[in-house]
Length: 266
Image (cartoon, rainbow, N blue to C red):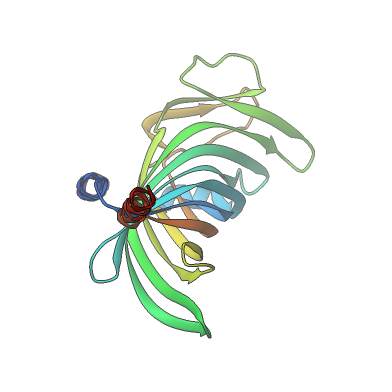
């Protein structure tokens, strides 16, 4: 099943990459910045693992950029990149131990969006939209703390290094640093001026890739610490984007008209 999910996500990535290449020659496009809070939780697909580990929501944030190309019939293509802070809070050893981890990612996504005109306020052009597309995250680094009722020990994540007696490091070996998933979102898009828009989106990122393979390990030199990377991340985000619309064709026509007027005056 996991291999099938990867094939689906890879197919979506290929499709959206073709669309992106086609739209790169377009005359109309929009650029913008986006930011907002996120809520992430860990999912353990294996029932036996869920009996040993329990998780809770980890609050984070993301900030990044957006480029959007209009298509026909109220469709549009959107590509985004962002820096995201996510993580996980996991309890184990009958709930007496807690691993509170904060991770940093580079987030890349593409989506096919469908918009519908609505009237939220008189004289303000606005739309509701729905979008779906693939998501890729690169796991940059992380930090956290392992704690009990009595003590708390902070750590820094270290990838692919031989563990030693330093209990300030969480050694992750054979972790999956490239994580694939699927974005599903909905929101409202409203014009502020003729060329500037503000839109708000609620998005669910369904992570497919496990944080680690079966042979992966997560080690800290603390008695009683245990971890399991056979899990994926699910994220709910609420972001606001400020968009600037560009029409290169109109811009060129405007320059041509001005040039003709100057030549006539001469």
